[in-house]
Image (cartoon, rainbow, N blue to C red; front, side):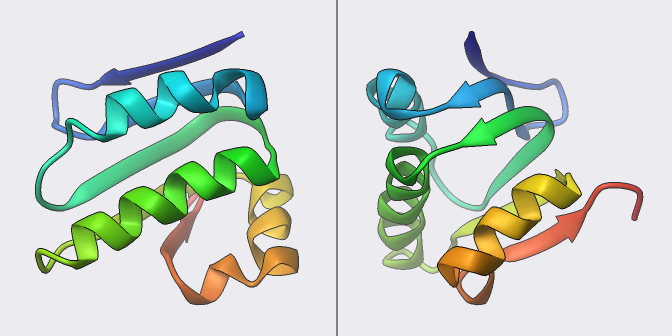
Length: 98
């Protein structure tokens, strides 16, 4: 299961597993985002390399217009994936509970 939607506060909420099977759905949604993107990962259970690729592509596009992606409510497990991949150097990451 994977869901992605725009919250009332303007953040993008992701839920479930962002893997290769869901990458097209996520990319299609994120291609519509303009300006600063705050991605709420409270309910994200898993992200694969395909999911990381979606975030990287979107981040690069938004950085080109002076914005980017900020990741909030990132669980310890998901944060580890970003650290191991080196992506923690690319994104502003706010861990869950902060």
